[in-house]
Length: 304
Image 1 (cartoon, rainbow, N blue to C red):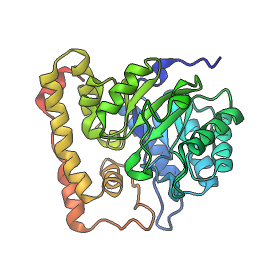
Image 2: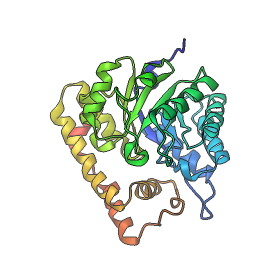
Image 3: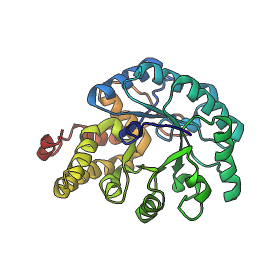
């Protein structure tokens, strides 16, 4: 029977950016600086090589090196979840085995994409990884806007019943679905994946979050959670609204390039996102500069 410490996963995780040099090679020095800055600020864990880390724009070798580097840099201070998802099962198994060897707390995978696989085939994809790495906790990455697959309690009962699948990263705006999964499978850890709905997701049963803008605004996430736990929803709304005002600009500019530039403004040169992402214009940079420099609500001091 797989044994986990649930406290490793009921946390505020940064969906870690991966800095690049001008030639698009991974800037490991900057990656280490980013990890150190975020741990210093209080970030409670890292989700590596996911959407924010441009995982699908990295080679398998790069994904392994990034994961290994972050685990070594964190040095046991916070848990690491490695995103291993891709379209080919053999590649996922390779990445999952490597993550286990590195000392990651869990692996997470998007479902296989592009070929419109059946739910039986998608289920087999996850089960093949579990059979290959049976002592590794697995977190389903539910992100239908990118994959076209929306997991729920009715279409994925075999997966949700498996003890090796400890939870779901729910990057979906369907919070009814989140609540229904929480009710049907109370032993699973439900993790919010859309920063702009963290407070609402907590109300519907989420116990943690993995977020892109945690790279920039961890105190707001900490405040949202603390206000929710104190049943001070008025304060929670203030913090969520403040985060969402920032998110509105960041999403308009481009979530990943904008967040990467925000990390540069906070002291670590992260470079640009890999092509085909476009570099930010000077006007877009000015918008992100204003967003990052904007002060937090005064009410936040009570909770951080």
